[in-house]
Length: 346
Image 1 (cartoon, helix red, strand yellow):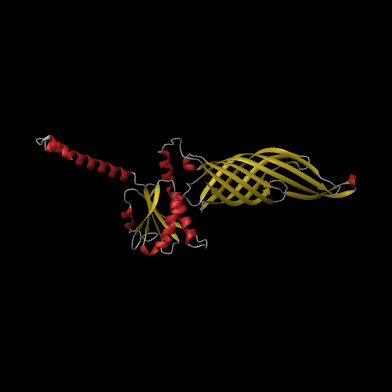
Image 2 (cartoon, rainbow, N blue to C red; image 1 turned 90 degrees about the vertical axis):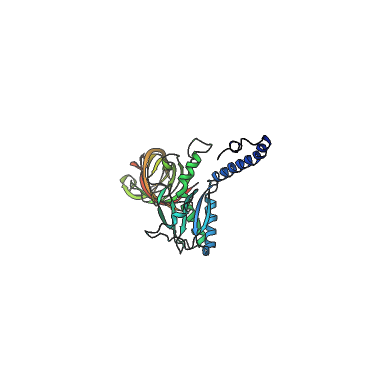
């Protein structure tokens, strides 16, 4: 833009001064407009036809709840008809809606059973996700759809957080995983139920695929049998009950990112077990009791399946711990457990 003073150098000083306020005002408006445009938040655009207003509104509310404080807002672009989900191989009409500031496009199949997303900064291909039918209507499905969209955008959100005022790195996320399953001892004890609770710290490295986990579990396997001793006049029966409280500190590595389905994981770590053995016999009334703290280790493997705010989980653990009580003999307090549960992520 040329300087008006150069164009009209021969004009008198009063004329020049009369133009200056207008030039200054135009410059201020241009800078303000540019600043407003640059500060306009990035958006997730939902492609929907006008007849889908009710379903679209519920999806927008769910997305807004998941994206709060992320710097990304949900918007709707009415498209009649919207793209198919999944789109035909030669249909790329959805790409015309990838305007500046649009980080992701989202659209649904006609029956709402599938969700399609396109997030070029993460993956340049259209991702198709199946939406499970919980029987609770579209409101429940919209929550699942919003969770899937957020999991896909999470790397962008973390990247934006890393460029803010906090330069210490990605925030730590926590998890809580209650589980129940079956404990099969590697000694002569009988199988028994196991209940467990894991507290997870998703470390801000490797895309949060490295987890520090404190695992607490409880089981109480038993064993009964008989023997003979001529000193007491023949055969006798006994019952042995072994209470095991285990605390483990595991390093767990998730073999896929949180937006994958499913997510396999493996882990290993030291354990400490409180073992209390109680024996009753037909020889005499009363109980014989013995307890100890036993060190050991465990290895684990499993699957996380994204559902709702967290993951449905299935896992197998092998625990080894020596045991040398007088009541149990020189054996072990190890076991193999299979369990299922739900991992809440905060």
